[in-house]
Amino acid sequence: MSATAPATYLRWMAQGHEYFTARLEAIGDERLDGPSALPGWSGRHLLSHVGHNATALARLAHWAATGEPTPMYPSPSARAEEIESGARWPASRLRNFVEEEQERLDTALDKITDVGWRAEVVTAQGRTVPAATIPWLRCREVWIHACDLPDGGDFTAFPDDLLDALIGDALTRRRGTQGVELDVRATDRETGGAHEAGGAAVRVEGRAADLARWLTGRGRAQGLHTTTGAPLPQLPPWL
Image (cartoon, rainbow, N blue to C red; front, side):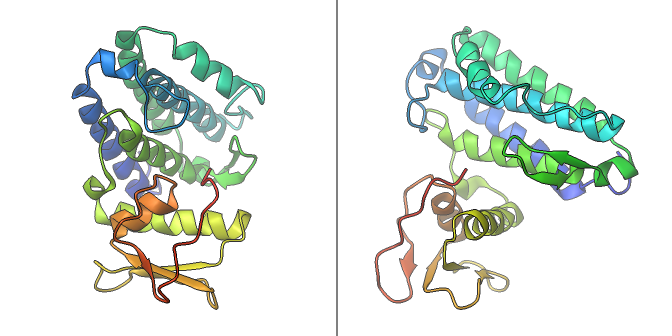
């Protein structure tokens, strides 16, 4: 990988894939037929999504490496169609699919040069971002969806630096696209635990794992509180 590759994102992505597969290995095939933590999705829907997401991000990596515009999905409906189609596969095929598509993404990322990491690509949401963002998008998927698996993981297992980055990312998105007026402070951080918007009406405090879980829409807001004693604000969907 080139010297200017986003090393931290790539490290988190690799660790996240290991965490996801470890949680998946602890789940029997019959549990994947039941519900995941995501409304309307079974465990097989979740595996289909995680595998197809790697495929889609590999297309962006190809775009960055070659300069050939390659959207994540060929049409607005393709993402949902892929997920539904894959959810009908046997669990064994889905398990292999997640591994194979992560390997394909790794290979595609390895082909990006110094210049390529700075190239602009367009996400499925229509955002134009530098290619260096691609592994960050993937690491969010594998870490968070490991917690969405039936009997899945928990945010307390995330590396501290990843939690801090995830909190900042979620706040930036919520403030930028949803107009959320919110400050947060991680009480288990001696320094650097505050994320302030400036003049925000509500400040929420708690452990970093609890803040990240709440900000990404994974519920369970126990341990969080506002500095005014008011109830926690109701957040719209994260993504």
